[in-house]
Length: 390
Image (cartoon, rainbow, N blue to C red):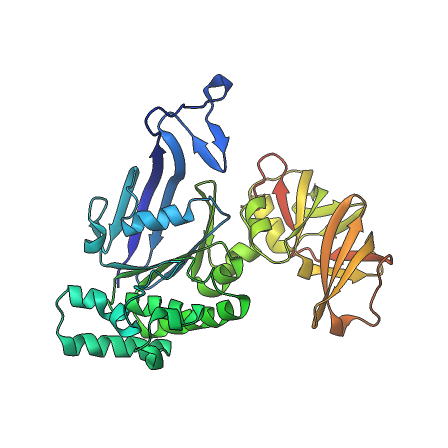
């Protein structure tokens, strides 16, 4: 029901009284626990700019301490914005109180009132607005029906499981019909099975309520399955913004390549070779011609032959009669596929092989050869870790 625009948002936590400002020799800011320390204080978020469309589902993802929850809390009004501008539904809200931003937030720890029933927890914010009782009852029961918690309306939170409590917390948020729904790692306290179920519930929820979602997680599976677009963060900076498919197929740098995808992308020291408008990657004497699309992008940037970091995802590597030689260290049967942990020279890597493609399962200690196609190879600069195609 509203677009959200963040323009060059910055968050600095000032030094407390008497705190010593630490700086490196030469005046460069010190790095500590992923945060930059400057004369102003500790910088948690830097130059964060993002346009979120009406009813879009945006996921902020990254490792602990990257600034994603701080960014969400600035949107909510729970953290003061040090610099930059925040617009919700076209209105500048930097100095608007949280209660007047028409947002709702779902927290990691549920934050339910233990002495109230599920019904009263969900109805509480509506009662504060002095909404008619009949209207409150309709909204609460509609939300309970959507979330399949109607049978729990008379219970108190202590009588519910973790997944049921999180449904109540979500229900309490959606009864308000907010312009923006903020979710701060809402599934992290649940076990794996419940997380899968709740992800499906959140996907269904989108079909029933017309609101803009901003969702924070450190779990890339949640990011890939829920988000229309993903914002990948590191050390307070945005690393890449794109659809799940874009960040998976076209990682902007080595950090994104290693963060998105499970198991993680295999990385090798290799050579990029240019011959006219054609490009090849060479790994241990094995040469692979890059796809026409990749060659065109590299040629447009006039990339020359150089040493590179080559990235290939485990599912894109093929066992072959000819290719790079490697030894099997560990073989993990995963049901529909086998995860092979290989040693190729001084490099460790993983290959995913569907069991239907295997005539006979290789064993630990066996020597195999592997190769890959040119359309799945990613080449990263040795200087700045950026993808040379973009």
